[in-house]
Length: 288
Image 1 (cartoon, helix red, strand yellow):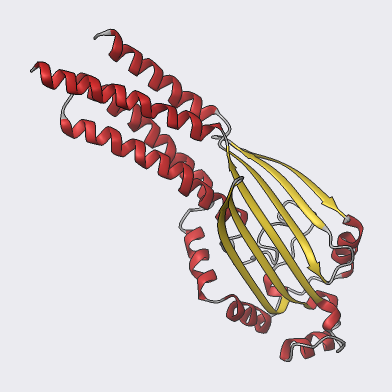
Image 2 (cartoon, rainbow, N blue to C red; image 1 turned 90 degrees about the vertical axis):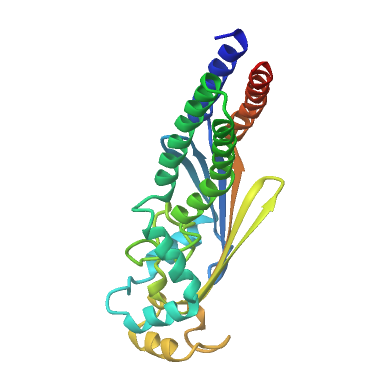
């Protein structure tokens, strides 16, 4: 084995190990109660995701009105069949489809994606070594294809898995979907969609200079803020501003920004090694 082959093997192994153990993504989740609660409480969560875990820091601005909202409301989830049907109709079929996607992950979509990326990295190192031992066209193609699969997992599959686990792309397996799209998951309380009447939600996706952005908006009447008679009236007819029950209207806006960590950088550094590897293969063919 010549020195060029040895360099490719050593560096590729080093880059793969470093990419696996590095910071994968840095995530900022900012959610604001835009309707119904005074001073617009804001929940901010900073996440760091790597190959093993997700660490986070949570802060709440203007927390007193939000704490009072959680304290004063009543849990009305048991037996609210009509409200659940209403919420399901308002959310639409897309939410149900995304919920099924989350169920297909068998718990955590991010953990499943971690396993797939780990297998891809092992395959990447194996095909690089194999291409140096047997420099044939099929193995050369397999090397490039494996690298492309890896970068696709990193820039597409992982952010989607994060958004799905967070809750912004659909509910959890039990159907107890958060009315804030998951932005209150790490806070003191979580209010489920099935405790709202005339609930509507919408989510979006975009790309900015900071990375991938997922947005979430929801609005509905929180039945936990009303007495039993008021709940029945609001469930049957959505009140207009100034009418009884309108004070239970709660609106929420959230933005989840997923910024790349050093994982992408280390994976991109493997590309020059592939080029060097392909040059070695071409030279071997020419010698033959």
